[in-house]
Image (cartoon, rainbow, N blue to C red; front, side, top):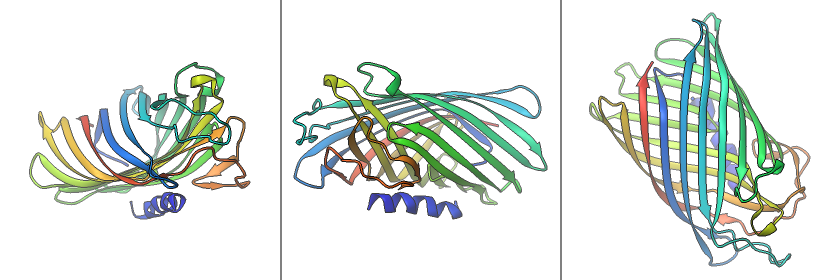
Length: 305
């Protein structure tokens, strides 16, 4: 079911995505939920904190260097795991991802531009960092600006993961209405925002965030990894302070994230979106998580371009 939802999130990208007249320099996000278990009545509290920072540096009129940093920490229980091996992990595990965002944006002329970013990261429980914690990703996006109201984007995201290589086609749109009250800003299937300004500083909207990534687990000398497949839908209300340079958003939504645990070395090769090109004959070591409501907030520092 969750694979169908992830595919649906990609398919709706035909009508939605990112070209904008502002930049979110700093964004902090926190949300919490309680996820159930599809096989029994056990539950686990899940908290997720995310910090993203971006620092564009213009080099020439046609070249802008992109630098940034992403930190994410998910706390949850994985102790419903591995009855067959007799092993478990701590009641509360931390899945941590730290990533550098290093690249360039080039003006190709005729209203076309390209963004090319290298995304090296460490993703694990950070108990004992090693080679299995390091993963390498990359992003390439071409953007065609048609007018001041909208532009389209096309590209690809690729990343090495503990389960193999994930390849994600990207499609995007940025649209702003004539009265500037409504906009859609999305890069799908990764994320999307739809926002309507009720007043000068207050707005409401909807948000979609998805991810497919993995974390190496080493606590208690385990030799496992977690594959996260996540879709989070939410509605939000936002208020802007300091001439809308500081924005606070409260969110309520549905979290469908699943955290599958597998043995290291148990891989699938290439995965495109949610489809394993060579099939998936891995043995999952824990039960599937069930979806649940969540609450959260975003704090965004935004500057005009």
